[in-house]
Image (cartoon, rainbow, N blue to C red; front, side, top):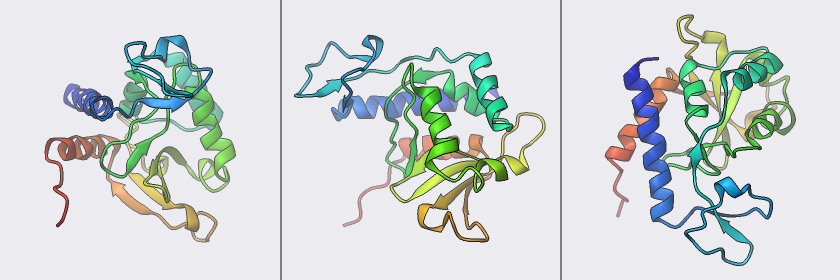
Length: 197
């Protein structure tokens, strides 16, 4: 992980969150939303409460606990991603939709994805750690079977929900590493595709 990689992650998150704010998409039905994440500068609509990102409270110890539960390691750059901002949505215009990272529920969100949403024998036990949805039909995972020793970065794969229970497990490589994925997502923010006519 380089300082440039870290800067790219921060820029990507900041721009994605700003886009949500500008498009008035930072609302969710969450009656128990922590006060720290409520955006009191905007009005609630019915049960839709406006939210705001806040600096992450994730510690190295928190991350180590999750890694121990999985018996797998995150890429260093993803750890930095987790320690940057808390948010409820991070949906860039690309298809990679990062899991919700709320201030108090982020660990439960990840553990649920690892051990309850999908068959752990198909993913975690085979070294695939999901961290995002791909549009509404796939899951995006770290392939920890091919981690680099210096920073644990690894290929990013997408698995179609419909094919998850097929053997052999079918997947598509989205990016050679998390750093490359983030660079690609950031580049797409800087040069958005124009809608086809």
